[in-house]
Length: 363
Image (tube, rainbow, N blue to C red; front, side):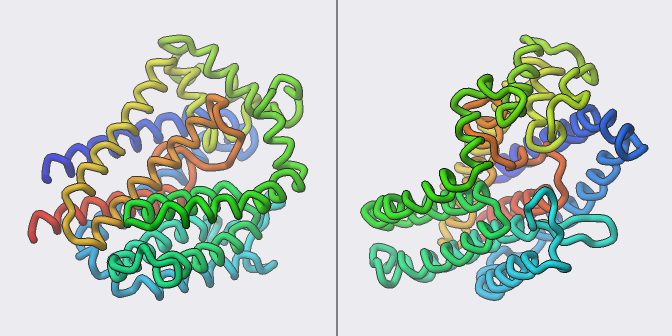
């Protein structure tokens, strides 16, 4: 599988390089105006990139099967972090959301660590109890209890998008593991009242749904981001207006270097740039799935599926939000968007995926 590892490495490297360029392009003027340095976000991103690279190399070097031994402690540690971040004075609140720890001016988002912790735990659980996955009491119910506890803590931040993302990945892993479709569909039906409450009874989420349906009806309010994103994508044409020449990044499009960085890519590099990004993620999912298909060891197989699903779904949601196919949600574009803890954990995931492939070749 050496060829697959090389292809994954090349794809991720191209995405990371594109991210470095576009983060500086999309944030330079904003950072100069608000923070006094055009390279503020770029410099911090490069620090995160170096840390992420070291972590990726470390996880490529160790035997990934060690993670199975510590699946429960890793999960418990992630739950503790999710609990601590909700405590005033420990967690940092930004725009009404308490999702970050702050250390020496740098932030850490524990929900990013939780994504990997849940993947490791679920993969280990399925590997140990493959013959019980059709059982509701011994296979399905225990994992739903864990998912419920994790979801509750993340929703308290509040962060519905991450909750849905984690649940979707877990359901994919359970479906592939042979869990009865009746159980999966049943829990989805039972969750509909909670979903209705979390959206319809929370004003800002309801406004996002309304803006998604018709962003131009409130183009100065809830639909502002979607309208500005569509303007950016539309003004780029096929070949773009040129690198660094975006107009929407001039304080029109909020979160231009994070959640809506694809819109700036579309404006500056055009349809050609956005299609290239989409193709790169399609290739990542395809090559990652080919790696998973060749894994014979159960823990590695399900962990690989979880990693590819996590990164692939997050990319799909971010791209969908940028083009107006999904309601606005704060999920960064993997490997490209600015975001320290997200970038580090994504590179760790890639390191584990490559490690799974390497160990399989040695078996």
